Length: 252
Image (cartoon, rainbow, N blue to C red; front, side):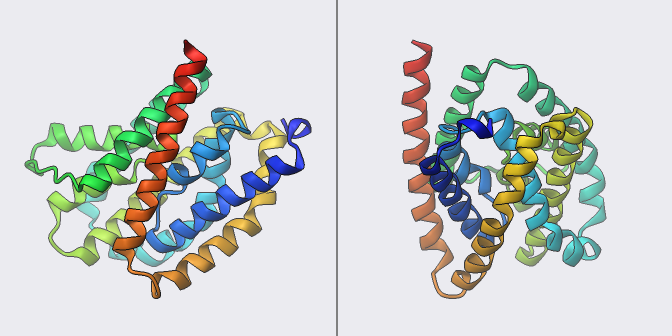
């Protein structure tokens, strides 16, 4: 994998990760949605998600450390087992489904997510419906492991279950951190991290990730988050459409 990476590819990979973690520093999630549409041209999806899982795990450590005691245990007990089940399902799919199909699914997912964010779709449901709770947990786990981004699924659930914004953010942080940890453990147990190329690439990207997060934290107080999110979602939408066209061209 590494032997085929040129200097220009390295620059693009570093820039993609750098931008992704600036977004992470401001919002606490979204790295895969930003980085994957660019990285997919240089690395296989089966390597991108494990690499980002390691970086996300490092970046989100503070989320677990600072918020776990403040989280709503009832919500965690209901969702975490379902997230685990969904993560296992997503991991199996990631390692077995044809690469071209995965790329197409990723492109569709990115386009739908960016449209969902830009159009501000407000999904309402009864939070006491256990079947829907289980569905949200499993779906978040599947999308988290398959595409590295299930955070917006948890956001939909929490916005219908809690009224306090601070509590929503706290529980969101814990769910994302747990999902990331689960992905990393699943990839470790499945032998993905026995591939030294993945570990070397992830290690080389740590400094870029750290700098991106620090800059994102600084920008958080300087740039209106609402405006920043709109800009990022437009960029993600364009990237997703481009990737979708590329995938359809390959499949046709």
